[in-house]
Length: 404
Image (cartoon, rainbow, N blue to C red; front, top):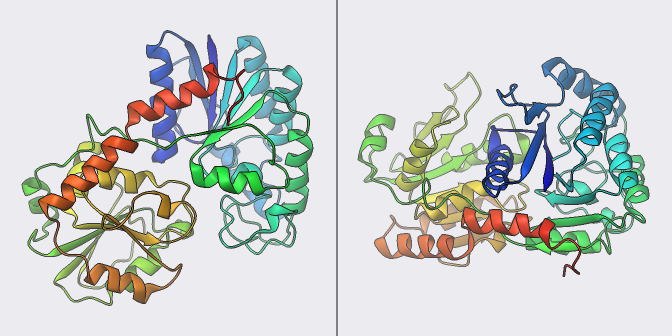
């Protein structure tokens, strides 16, 4: 069989790693696989191809911010992509994150619909059934029709115009009568998609995300990493992972929470991408992006609790990685967070209630062997990468069956 995969990233970020793992998985089964991406560096592989270049991303991003129409530019790049897909003649096309300023969605979706190829649209977030947003948050307008968007200045952001209604209806028109389109993703997103005015009735295959709990993410010895980071492992260590520059990750809230504690509680942040650190509290350890996954698993193992202050996650990969390394999680009860784990290894606060987060951290002790085992057991039961890859594959091989 021939497969085409399309995603914004290839190696960078959780979605890039997931799709690249899926590419490898399909290849291992003997399939012919082509992976088209929009934002990573060019890959030394004829079957892993970048759709546009850095300047194309910038031009699309500028036009989008000025017009409010993310996904309506990059016409020449999308035409070239369509030409390649037409030449490949795939049996299945997997769509992942189409947002990210790298392709023209109306052109691509129209072509796929008319071509009759079987399309599996993986919902890593809520973007496929919303107007222009990636997460609905507390907004329920998508249940009838997106307009007067309360998140118009959030990613994908517009400086001036609200075009959420136009984008919503573009998707609605294209989805209508598209018999060879199936959605796939986590339970939270299925619940929301079933309520959407534009996605209601589209077949949906449900399964959990997964991480490599066998080879990478498992409890590690913390001696070397605590020495390298100069963190006393006897202190309570709170960890978060995410770029400071990404508003959705809520790192500003994470810093505010750190200020509520003295130096006996360490707040470790992986992904700090700002230059100024003088204003950070003394118990805040800011570390740039860590690309070494073995080192990241040691960092997860070092933490006593993983705290995410994100305003929207379908199913946080970082949380799954933390659980696999034996670390419990604390989060806002928003999006799909509360689906991850029950107490005592999963604790949740009302959205934006920093005082409640503070109390949850205070009530969490240093990690015990019992907590480590509970976290690890849950990861083994529900969040295996092998299970995830197999379920994604089943979404195509079972395409002609009724997916419930």
